[in-house]
Amino acid sequence: MKKEDVLFLNQLVNSLDEACVNLERSYKRGNADRFNKSKKLMLKIQREISDITHGD
Image (cartoon, rainbow, N blue to C red):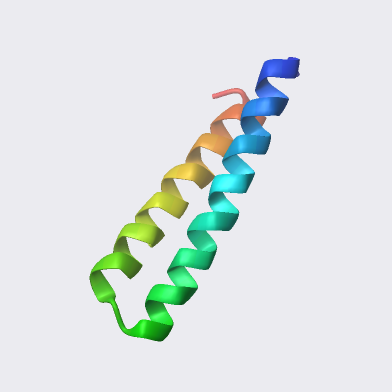
């Protein structure tokens, strides 16, 4: 794996952590719209991580 890929993965993981915090915060506040946006973002990031790690 290239150094650029590792750095990008690190960025994605950090973004995933942040989205997780936002998801939890939205849930606690009962903000369904923001919750759904956070969930969709998390799924998108997870797909990107999977693509990089599996070479798709």
